[in-house]
Length: 243
Image (tube, rainbow, N blue to C red):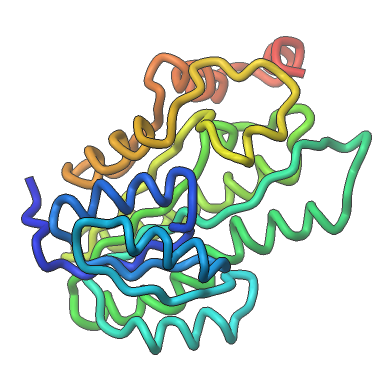
């Protein structure tokens, strides 16, 4: 178990859903949180509801200047948790170019901008903790979700590469891959969502993982086996089953 009391963590994507639920978990453990997202009002409401110390630093991860300015305000931290993301359900047959680019720029490139702000500092001092958020949908291409799944796949390979580079240092890299979590984003879906989780349950999974030395956790466990197992299927069978 990690000693969390007094640690400073930058939680990006904290304003609602999984991010807000995780903020409560971490704050109760004694973490000093820097809460970031685009909505300052929601962040202030969250900060007021937390049991521990917190600061509010708004950021737009799709804007490099915003990330740079926020990182300067945040200063030295013990860790960063990247949860910020957007989602719209569509595939190739009803492609929305603006929404597709937004998913790529916020979900993936936003994570890359954040890494640019913290990884060099962590490497220089040989200390730090990075938690990136992928998705069960990122293991392999899925129908009706080209933009979203590719953005999450990018985050997942980013985490894997960072872990490969840093696993023998004192910079810890971890990846969480949630399934469906009940939020305003999944409320957009008009299809059945097996094993959908409450944000509080998903946050418990994430925080439990953060207390381990393991690199990756994909959850819910039973549901994750479908996606992880699909990687071993030949193309002709995979697309017959999933497309």
